[in-house]
Image (cartoon, rainbow, N blue to C red; front, side, top):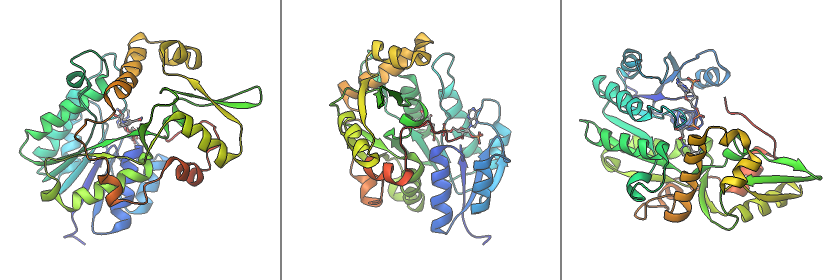
Length: 314
Ligand SMILES: NC(=O)c1ccc[n+]([C@@H]2O[C@H](COP(=O)([O-])OP(=O)(O)OC[C@H]3O[C@@H](n4cnc5c(N)ncnc54)[C@H](OP(=O)(O)O)[C@@H]3O)[C@@H](O)[C@H]2O)c1
């Protein structure tokens, strides 16, 4: 047991983090140290019941000593940065400092949840700092004296439950989606798909050192999503545009209340539509090849029993 390698997970209660904890513990062969601000929370407690060791600490700047403690003795670390609104965002510094702490603690392999560099790809035309900052963190980590691998999650199916929640209108469910109706984009369930991919990477550090790997569950358009939703739930449903500024403002006024936030959402979706969510050279088949069970949209709807209500993952 004492020889069993430890993996530290920063952001362990996040949708991605809890998936990684579960896969590492269920598959056997690893001990897991789970970093959370609140070890008494329901999600943290469920991670502990699965066998994780909980360590208290926040993913906010200035917590370096707590991170070093959490990473000490770990062979590998999986790092997720919390969702950050663009105004005053310090996500780049946060990601870099957490990675520095992992290196200081002697971790041999860092796996960071990144996104593509929208600034570079669009020549500065589109604004999506929560993408670009993660890509810059990945670049920074690549220069550190540690093996490193980056995963890039597709759009989360759960966005429709947490942020773009449907509503009932004239007896029919309205699904406002932040993409054009016929645009096929990559989607994934972060809660079940992150773990198998990260477990595979952590089990073969030499093979995956320096790689950036997409995690994809389905490539699907809003029209197809709504049709499948109707087929699976038996509910009448229709697409609404939350892709243009007016559509977003009409359906989710709270999301455009901060102009910079609105600019970022529109920057992100326009980037996905005009340039593709993933860089052209990414291997979109990799995650399915190592995890054929990754949920498609239809399987996700059946597995979760979601019928359009708001759901929280906190
Ligand atoms: N939505 C998408 O489509 C999508 C796609 C790809 C990537 N992403 C990226 O995924 C990341 C979020 O991952 P997720 O959705 O898995 O996370 P999440 O479920 O929103 O959870 C974020 C976690 O951060 C932890 N945290 C620690 N310190 C925090 C602090 N000071 N403030 C806020 N949270 C703190 C929280 O854990 P405790 O409360 O236990 O401390 C929480 O569990 C974001 O960076 C986002 O950009 C999102």
